[in-house]
Amino acid sequence: MRWLIASAVLVVAIAGLLRWRRPAWYWLTFGVTLATFRVLARYRSVMDACGLTVPPPRWRLAIARMANRPAPEPRAPRILRLRPTRTGLVLRLGLRPGQDAFDVAASCDRLRHSFAMYGVTSREIRSGVVELRMTGYDVLKRVHLPAKTQRTVMRVPVAVREDGAVHYRDYRTTPHALTIGATKSGKSVYQRNLVAELASQHVALVGIDCKQGVELFPLARRFSALADNPDTAAGLLDVLIAHMEGVYQLIRAEQRITADTPDAEIAADIWDLPDHLRPVPIVVLVDEVAELALFATKDEEKRRDRIITALARLAQLGRAAGIYLEICGQRFGSELGKGITMLRAQLSVRTAHRVNDETSANMAFGDIAPDAVLATIQIPVDSPGLAITGDASGGWARIRTPHTSLRTAVNACNKHAHLTPDLPTLAAFRPAVEPPVTLAKIPAPATA
Ligand SMILES: Nc1ncnc2c1ncn2[C@@H]1O[C@H](COP(=O)(O)OP(=O)(O)OP(=O)(O)O)[C@@H](O)[C@H]1O
Ligand SMILES: [Mg+2]
Figure 1 (tube, rainbow, N blue to C red):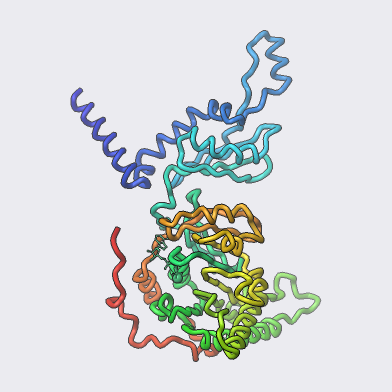
Figure 2: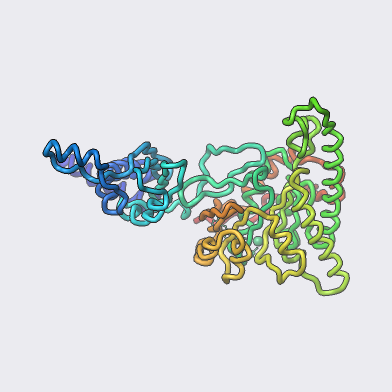
């Protein structure tokens, strides 16, 4: 008996320790089972308490009355599926007549408390079916991407969402993106993550880093072209425009539309071209974009106009030629001069890290998701990397990137350096990588 009590105390102590120090391990060992039982045991009473039940149908009341039986109880949404995941539970519910997805969405916070989960979000799967995604712990505190993710061509995982799902950057669905945030909010780490993920793909990386190249030049072995000042950036963007025009000539030459050409075979972008003809897609990463838009002299003003016009043209026309923009900056509003709002309108994926004022948050979300503005200004100072992401559909989510150190990103780029396409048009901007970047010179990341 004494042994039994001692082992029970030991198990409880281990569970408590894991829950405190390693919530993800606690979830996988104890949490998932306890939470599953808790949700199933409390389901009916919680739904009742949260106002998510409907009265029984009349015919059942009538039958009960005729049979002199007690009136049937109100009915909660049907549980269609309960699936444990790495970070929480996914509960799929079939709504009863008279209920709607908004009722469930409005009760998420109450459900979170009642089921003792860390977070609950809901989304409509189809008419009458709602999915509740519950997380067992704060998945954004210590972010790890799962080993198995659904990477495809030009679609890479970059962050974890607050509901535990993986957040992807999909260039073929949403080609251009804008990332803003105050200084030290995590923009460059987000971009570094992207580079490390894209490194293994068949893609050309082009970088413009006006912070004298401190962020992107260490990753130079995987870059086909790099610019570290506005003058070089202007030349590089002109070459990209010329490249884009060349790709369009190629697509036109391949179209050859005749009456008997099937619709699916008419090429309208690089992805419709046969594999052997398809030009390599290019991702253009711009860090500290405001540096490209600021000027002090007349000459610099001309250069600035040239750069912004080139970026706007790439944003408007680049997608079909396989040129994708990834722009980062602290602010990106009309105060940077003419052409900026036009360029911003083309950047459909918006990600905002912590900002210092509402105006900055408005630059990202004011025109697409006003409630995301509020979520952005609530990001705390002590959580760099935490961000709100949204797209033109109006939906938004809280995400956080894993903390990829510069050393990890350099290793990923060096490992895949042989995949760097040698584009003749960009040869003049190819960074000098001999001798290779010395890892020893990069400070090791501080251990937590
Ligand atoms: N996802 C993350 N998880 C944990 N820490 C992070 C994360 N992202 C960034 N940080 C921390 O925040 C620091 C600043 O990040 P980063 O350099 O990306 O900021 P930034 O927004 O680019 O700043 P600046 O505008 O000054 O260039 C990093 O050195 C790192 O310590
Ligand atoms: Mg930075």
